[in-house]
Image (cartoon, rainbow, N blue to C red; front, side):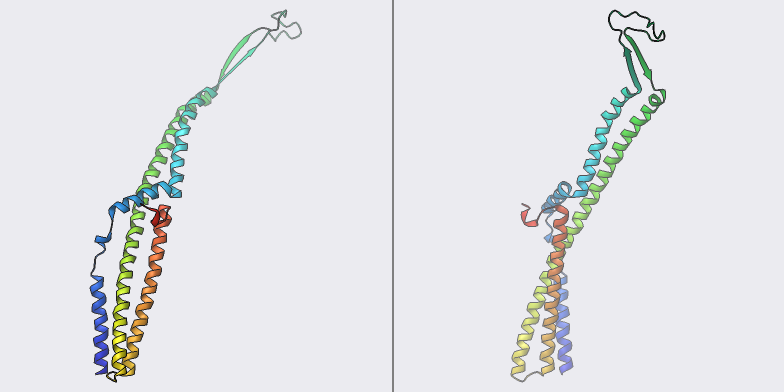
Length: 226
């Protein structure tokens, strides 16, 4: 009789947990909140900011590259002071007066088109990397949000399990005091209640971890999100 009662009690627990487990979390997902979280992550997450700065830097390189075409030219002039002859009698190779000259670095001139093309390619790569990470970031926010909703649901299940086991333990205590069940049967109900409480505490920890993980990626506390 005692073994039969234990089996019935354990079966009741599994049926109860299975009933809770059949509840869906789909209805708990708030897609408007999820979109806010994704937007906050794109705005606040450090790596996303770093990639944006990379794109900005690559854009700034384009005008710098265009202006660098002037680097290949080197202009110079000589000035002849007043009352000086055109030919320097001391150094006949030195001619007085205004003299202009322009030197062109041919190697640098030939490299400029390739340098400009590289700058444009660097900008495209930076933009593609930023776009790719933006997609990955959205997926990661969704994953953490779903995990957070899952932990809320699991905490509800374990909280209900604690209440059910408490009701059973209280009922077993009443029966034990009346001598209707053995001490072992009553102790088993207390063990089941302890196990349920332990599972609930672990669920609470899991929920806090999921909440921290979601807040870490969006950059603000969930309570601060309107």
